[in-house]
Each structure stands twice: as structure tokens, then as C-alpha cells.
Image (cartoon, rainbow, N blue to C red):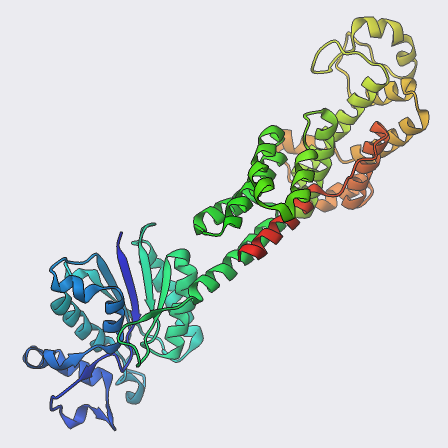
Amino acid sequence: MTTWLLANVGTRDVQVHDTELPDDLRNGKTFWARKLGDYLLKPEIYKASQGQITMPMIEKALRYLDVPRRAEKGEGSDLKIVLFATDQPETVQDHYRNNDTLPFAHLMRELLFDRYTLAKKKDIFIETAQERPSDYDLMHAFYSTSLPKIAKNIHAGDAVFLLVVGGTQQMNTMLLFLGSQQFEAQAHPLYVSEESNRAIELDIARQIMGATLRRNLLSLLETYAYTSARDLVVSAQLAQPEARYLIDVLEYADLRRNFAFHEAIKKLREPIKALPKHRPALEHLQNAIDSNDERVCLRETIYLAEIAKQTGDWASLLARLHRFSEGSLQLAAEAAGVRWHDKGRKKFHKSWWKEHSEQVETKSSFTNEEREIDREVLKVVVQLFATDAGRADTLIAALDVVGRPIGLRHNIVHRFAPVSQKEIEQKAECAIEDLIQAMHTAYHAAFNAHDDMTFAYGQVNALCRELIEAML
């Protein structure tokens, strides 16, 4: 594991004691950072005065990281340091440019290497900001560019310490805020006070990371992107027990929407044991899919059509409409006594057809031998043989609405034609919401059902939100 120390360099990061310095380096009671740094970097001056130079900010951070003790014992170091310094262009007024800290950064690089026996001088990097360091927007842009470049060299097991006391307030704010976002759980902000001889670690990074993680998870839930949400929680490496159970629920949702009901049910076993407060909701989610019955699958298709509607996945919506219409008619036909020749339900059983063909042929041109059963034939069969004519009429009327835009699906499958909400609604002669409602109506009519049809994935998301609130 490598330890990274990212530090802003300010005008107070280098101090010189018991050494006479030229007056032209002074800015009143202090010194110009650029002039003082350039002066101390002269080889003869550096050699004579390095013992009188201190770096109060970064040395306290190094004590926190135990670098001085390790250096004394000759243990070497797995430390890499990045110094953020300023170097504004010559067009900037002398008053501001003379306080640029790039010479301090080069001086600190020499001192750090000489004092703490860092293995290689190239392990101390300098990042230079040419923008005005007192401008929040400019510093935001600078760190937004610099930090991702640094992150390319940082591995999963590394720790990243952010020293947020050198430099301007704007530099420290952006290093803290953007550094915590960039490095997430790896980020450890450090603060230095005059009272302590070593830095202290701040909790703010965890809070920033938590707020960012929470916001991103909620956004993913809004689009039902359960796999992405699960991966985000895993990558955050959270210690809270709720994180493990949130992952279970997200995996449940992903398996459920792919009709892997048996595997989905198993994902909720541990959360049910560990979360008594949420046990009723979890058991309800289990019980809702505790069967591979086709009726359950058709109900699930309605929920998936709702997801397609909310996320604007119109190709998926058409596929759900088609599968629901065909599946509902097939099950309604079975309830009316139809028997099939094959598992694919492409033809009627010969004995059933022999007994009922005359009635079917009076209402349609279908013959069992010449072509496969389609939705129109199934509608005729349901209306002819259903035991409850009223429910059959309601089912057919609702499925007529559901079926209006299904033809657009063939344009996608066979011609890769684009499809839009407007096109679907024009073909359906109603709003998308009315199509979903027609699916509900058809389901109740097909099965004389009184199922709880509350949107299941809305219930999943509500549970996930509660776990996120408890966790973050």
C-alpha cells in the first residue's frame, strides 16, 4: 500500500529562523514567497541555511503519518507527496505574483528529500496553478483537472491524505471538497493547528462522500438502475451493516426484474433476519414472487411496463405490451377449456379442435393445420368459450387498447426503426398511462383477480431509501 499526501503550499509553509535575510525579500513584517523561495534555493544559501528552515504545515502532517520516526530508523518510506503551488503569469501585478509559491514547492521538495530519506526525489510531485488562487471558480477548474490525473496513479489499497491548511482559502476548499469526491473512502483530510505538533484527521471527507453517495444512489433508484446502484455501494466499502443488506435488496430487485424469482427470494433471507423493522416489507416482497406461475409473470410484466414508461424505454414498453397481450389471452383461453398441441401454444390440440372447430371457423378464417395461433384467434376463442361473458368482454376490450401500438415493435425488430412516446400514443389513440391502466384492467378481467397491484419496484425503492438514510 502506498500513502499519498496531497498538500497545498501557502506563503506561510516555509519559515526561516536565526538567519539574516536581505531586506528586498521582505513584504513588511513577512517575506515575499516567490523572492524568498528563489533566494533559499541558491545552492550556497540552501547549504548554509537549510538547518534553520522549517515547514510547519507539512511537517506536522508527516508526524501524523509517522514519517520522521521511520526515517530515523532507516525504514525508508512508501510515501508519495504532491505539492500544489501557484505560478501566475508575468502579466499579473507584482504584489500578487511575488506571493506565488512555486519556489517554495521546489524548496520543500529538496528539504523533504534530504530530511526524510524518501526513496526517490521523483516521488515528490509539484502541480502548478497559473490561475488566480483567490478565485473559487478558477480553483475548482484547476483541481477538477489535476486530481483525476493524480488518481490514475493511485491504486485501490492506497490511502490519500489531503492537507488543507496551506494555500489560499479557495485552494483548501477545493482540495477538500473535490479531493473527497475524487478519492471517496480513500480520502483522509488533515488539519493543522498551532496548539498541536501533529496534524489531526477530519471527519468531513466521510460526510462529503456520504452526501455524494447518497445523492448518486437516489438518482440510480429513480431510473431503476439496480446493478449500477449495487456496484456503487460495493465500491464505497462501507462498514455499516445496512450496506450489506442494501446490496441484498438491490440484487433482489435486479434478479426479480429478470424473472429469476427463486434466486431473488434467497437474497432477502439475511435482511429479513437482521432487520426486524423492515421485516413486513421484506416478507411482502418475497411472497409476491413465491411462484413461477405464469400469472405472476404477467403481473410482473405490468410492473416492467411501468418502469419502461418512467424511464422512456419505449422499445421495452412495446415488448412488454406484446408479451402481456399474448400471455393473458393464452391463459384466458386455457381457463375457457382450450388444450394445446404443443408447449409453445402455437396450435390447438387435435381433439379439442375437432370438437370446437366449427364454432371457431364461423367467427374467423383460422384453420388449425394451416397457420399458427395469433392474438386475434385467441380473442375469438375466449369470447366463444369463456364461462363469464362479461369478464371476457372486458378483457378483450382492454387488450384491444393494449394491442394498438404493438405493430410498431415489428419496425424495431426487423428494420431498426426508431420509436418515440408520441408515435406510440398516436398509434394507441391514448396516453401511455392509459395503456398501463388497460393492462391492469385486462389482468383483473383475465383472472378475476384481487391482487395487490401496488407498483412493486416503488416498494423496493422506498425500502432502499430507508436503508440509505439509516446508512448515510
